[in-house]
Length: 219
Image 1 (cartoon, rainbow, N blue to C red):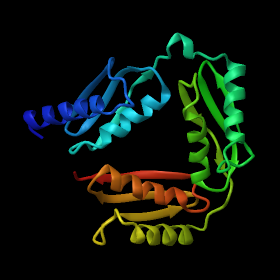
Image 2 (image 1 turned 30 degrees about the vertical axis):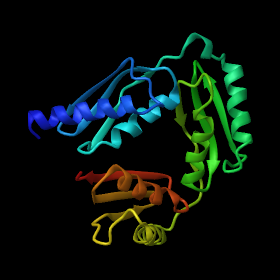
Image 3 (image 1 turned 60 degrees about the vertical axis):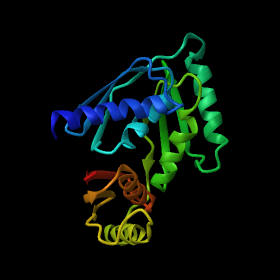
């Protein structure tokens, strides 16, 4: 990637962040090296931390996003540990997609999620349920997936899901390999949207506890 193209990717990411109404770019800096984009600085909420990375991935030429942003809460958004813990557990209990076996603990604005689920999608649902709470600075997801997976069945089910998916072309070279409860994805995808579709399909399979992402984005 030439200097002009590298500069263009950085500028495009900055423009996309500025265009996104969900991100305050006042203290966000963008660096780019051959499609590897780093986001540095601070944002005032955890949803903005997440959204900044999503916005960067929408830009053509971006191959990886390294989100080094720190959540610097406004003074009025701080919550003490007991109050944030209660709010998080209420949010989990009120979400029908999150099993009862999941709970949250807060420490200095950092939420830790623990418990057990059957599906990776339930694990992700728990994280989404608390991500938008006032006072959250970060989330550590330690929820365990307890179901034992059959590697052959998991591989076949994920491959079938990829074959059905509208975003994934019939000539895709994405390969799925399962060992134990871990799925490894390799091959090439054209966009971050296609990448996310592949990863999401892998997490939907029963018993998958970890997804190793070795996909390459061609742009």
